[in-house]
Amino acid sequence: MNPIQRALLAPAAIGASLLVAACTATPEATQGSPSETSQVAAPSGPSAPASAAIMADAPKTVATGLDAPWSVVFRDGTPLVSERDSGRILELSATGAARTLGSVPGVAGIGEGGLLGLAVDGRGRLYVYSTGAEGNRIQRFDVTGQPGSLALGEPETLLDGIAAASYHDGGRMAFGPDGMLYISTGDAGQRDSAQDLASLNGKILRMTPDGGIPEDNPFPGSLVYSYGHRNPQGFAWAADGTMFSTEFGHNAWDELNIITAGANYGWPAAEGITNTEGFTDPVQQWAPAEASPSGLVHIDGTLFIANLRGQVLRAVPVAEPSTSESYLDGGFCRIRDVAEAPDGMLWFVTNNTDGRGTPGPDDDRILSVKPERK
Image (spheres, rainbow, N blue to C red):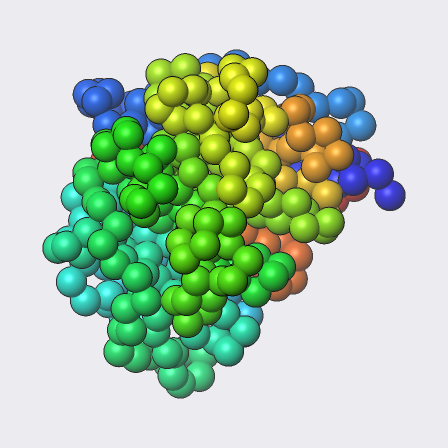
């Protein structure tokens, strides 16, 4: 089957009439992340071919009443959710009821910092990216108990000293098909750090599950896998192993990048497609007003991108990554993360309680849709 004949989602109008007020922006300064500022969505970027699929069914609610949720992962089929501001990790039941699995100690985030990305390894251990008093760090926790009564063990710090700020903290983590842990770090407002290979900021890092430096990393003795990033946000891998990442731009362009070992993505000298020698251009770019591409997942030949400021769920066919199609059109306001559930459903996480929007009565929520052929 053609990989662009897969995909996504409910019509744009679903739920929009009930949620217009929740999409109202809260004005704020643009010094930090203009791409995260909540605004009414502008028209979408390049359109996907007419053969791209849609879904007829409306999204269904999985969970409600969450507090600035940031990441959702699955551990042996059980959904785990991080809450940025509370520092809590939640376990969701089959009915969507949330209970606190545990709280990450010492979370000291402000603004975009806090409890951010989660990842789970093949042994069921939980990896957590969070902001502490001394900066951003990566910790590993054992998880004990059975679904419905899971508990968080003591933290083991694998990496710390990543500069933190109230904006540009990165925070996404995912295990690649090679078994290595990939981590996104923002420039924390220190632009030049993105080009400094001695800095952990403005990078995509790659480490072993125990925090070591893989021997085949592109820079010997370094966790740096790629550099020249402003604030990368999501990771996904196509079936052939191609790695994709979303990235918040500044005033010009948000990006979808193909990530290769050792490549320089240009920030702060370049933003978006510039055709500058020595820099790797994105395969697709969007004006920040219509994007803020955050979480990213690959399902059956299609990349699905959560968008905050653009308030859409965007589908990008892997076969034609310079094209895309947008869904939901503000009906659920800010969308932070996406994930594939064990049953093949596409989950997406709203983010209207994070201080950048006006939450509706059930926010924040996790919703699901079933990708179907057209």
